[in-house]
Each structure stands twice: as structure tokens, then as C-alpha cells.
Length: 228
Image 1: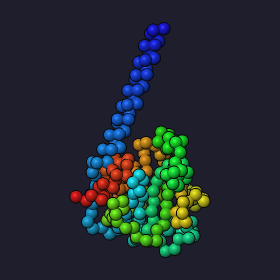
Image 2 (image 1 turned 180 degrees about the horizontal axis):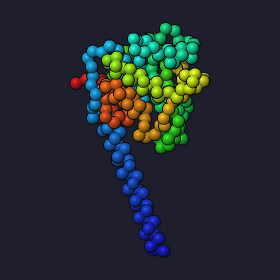
Image 3 (image 1 turned 90 degrees about the vertical axis):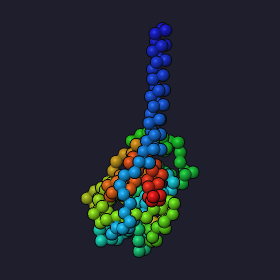
Image 4 (image 1 turned 180 degrees about the vertical axis):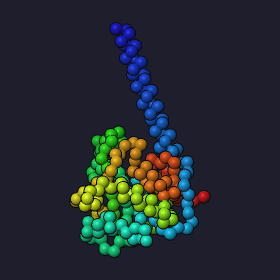
């Protein structure tokens, strides 16, 4: 009996130590993984786009039309009947349940948060057409990139959509406003593959300065806003 108790205690201690080790590792990656810079910030480039943050989530804001890409050929304007003559398109990847069930932070439930964080959950693309050019601020960064690197970014973004023979797959009637929609996406969301990790990968693929391993919005924006 005493041996069983000792064995149970050891198992509990090992479990607690494992949880602590995991939390420490994740905290280090979350808070410091994005501080190590990779890539470069170009002062000139053929194409200008923006990266925007709400403090938690990041999106890419890309010109609707450029010599390298016309986004209306991929994301049909017919899906946005209220939008006229858009200039930029905002695209972000994330947890499907979180996106669809949490239009406001007040709508966030414990179940949604836990499912997004600890289980490999389905994903969606959040797309919004914008009629105005984004304004630079401490949460909106202007980026310039070569045509070649922009084409790499475009390929990465398009490949993130879970498309079929008819193109991107609209999740009907789930947009927050009149100028946005959700589409089916590839991949699974979890603690080590967040919405910001998606943006971070897009920037790294296009050679733009960002964090080596950015799970947070700050790990991305700090390199774009602080240009020194």
C-alpha cells in the first residue's frame, strides 16, 4: 500500500513538473521568440502593403490591384455586395470557432478559448475589402517589398485558403460587417500555430523583417513600427 502511495506521489510530482516546464517553455517562446529579428525592411519597393494589429491579432492589408496581383480574381467582389471600388483587402488566418463565435471580446467563452488553445481546431480566413488606404499608426505598419517577394507572399496567402474547383469556399452569412466575410482555410490552430504565427510566416517568406518565432502580435509589430 505504501509503495502505491509513493508511486502515486511521484506520478503527481512528475505531472506538475511537466506542466511547469511546458508553461515556462511556452512563455519563453511567446514573449521572447519574437524579439529575435529576421529579414529586412526595405526603404523602397515596387509594391506597398500594410500589416495591422488590434493588439492581439494581426492581418495583412494588401492592394486589391497591382501589376503582380488582382485579388478580386481570387476573392469575388460578388461576395461583398455593399462594397464599391475597394483599394485594399485585409486577410487574416485563425481559429474557425473563435472567428465565427467571437465577434466581440465580450462574446468569448471559456470553451472557445480552451478549444482554440489546446486542441487542433479547424481554421478560417477572415477577409475584408477596404475602400480607404490604411493609415499608419502604432498598430498599422507600412511595408514596401519587391515584386518577386510580394509574389511569394501572395502564393502563401492563396495556398492558405481551402479552395475547391470553384475557388475559395465562402462560409455564408457569418461576416461581422457589410464589408467582410469568412472562408474555409487549411491547417489547424493551436498554441504553437496561432494567427500571428501565420502572419509571421507570410512576412518571413517575403523577406520582410519580423520575429524569428512570433506567436504574439507584438512579436511582429515591434520590428515594423520600430525601424531602428
